[in-house]
Image 1 (cartoon, rainbow over the protein chains, first blue to last red):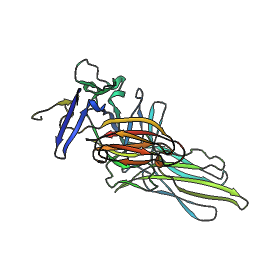
Image 2 (cartoon, rainbow over the protein chains, first blue to last red):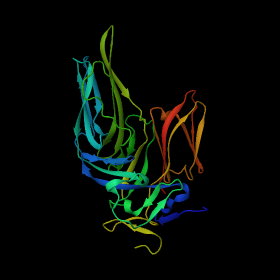
Image 3 (cartoon, rainbow over the protein chains, first blue to last red):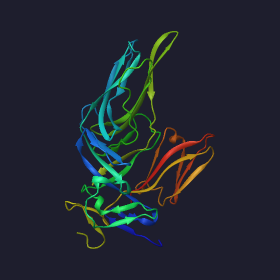
Image 4 (cartoon, chains in turn yellow, brown):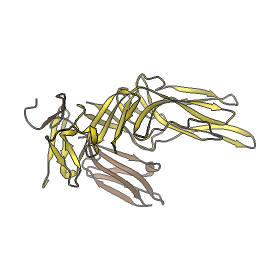
Length: 248
Length: 94
């Protein structure tokens, strides 16, 4: 490198890059962690939300519904995040069917989960920055904050591991380690919370079982033709990469 | 306390950054649209080592892109006739 700061490290696992300003590396900073069902993200423009819900009610398993012709259909229970209006909320969801509406809906229930929020150092702002004027700061060549000791306010850092690639199918296993966290900023969807005539309902989320973590994506729909109403469904591929992470 | 190198401690004394802590770094963050038959290359060392580099693709049709990883970078290719849009994030894990 011809300029800047390059920090290399080593541990029992080998050597690694800590930061390299010539590559415009921007470090991820853990700004919050804990257990709860609602977290503010006020002031954060870019962030990743990692969740673990092992042992949480309706974080795994299936709801079984009986169709009009007596067949049985299964809808995964699981956890999803809803991010809006300055708050991240964590829910489980279960599915109901109404023959009156010829439609499905889900019921979302707030659940306490374990979580942490990681933010690129350049996007840490406001109260997440320690209020003093000393420390170490590394800037990228394009003027972003790569590292700033004032932005390490939570006393924690994270590691990220392979997860599931975009396009993964319903039921794909993220990990056989049930204690890891799954990133939920992207890729989860709770489904409609009210019946709508002839609605198609897609749900995407994560199941936290005792022995593994898996993605679920399922679409349920109702068709009406000359022979009457019929119900159907099928797996929905993920449209986001799902990452695994952990606090260190 | 490490015998050498850089260390930064958090408010309660935890070592939170330094030459013996593994860090996650954002290396690429972009929203792209690749036209039919086109491709996009990102220079990322050790991109074919998932312990060192993770690629995140987000988007309704992102799964249609062909991803080729080598030790020098990542190529996203669109073999279809239509454009494909995606958010691309590359994380450096080590």
